[in-house]
Figure 1 (tube, rainbow, N blue to C red):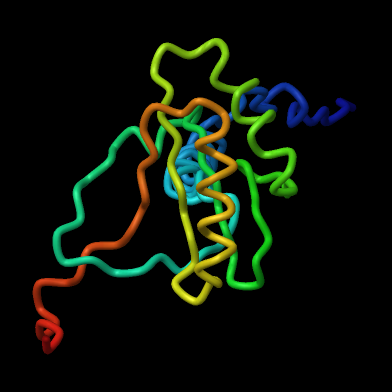
Figure 2: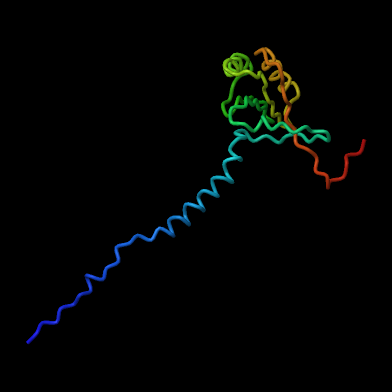
Length: 147
């Protein structure tokens, strides 16, 4: 009499299938590549539209100094809220190590003009050589505004 022995345990496949992991990693990479540029604008501001807007690529750089004024009159330096009294000192501290003394201003279209001018005065008190006012360009498909 013989004993029937099963050899199923010897046929176990111990290889790791990395294809699903690579697929998931590629999808995550694409998601992060799409979302990362959107994170540059830390404060949501509706920019005014201009006909003759000039492209300022340096404003999108990570180390650019950006001041934002929201519609409710709050002033932000980067993503941090600042007071108008402190903005000059904080900007001069940021520009201390830089060769170009350029600051970019993002002001909401519905912001109080006086608050925007107070922020501009605070920026100028820091010794800024150039101040770029960021706007959006009118779409070419839209009809031109009546004068």
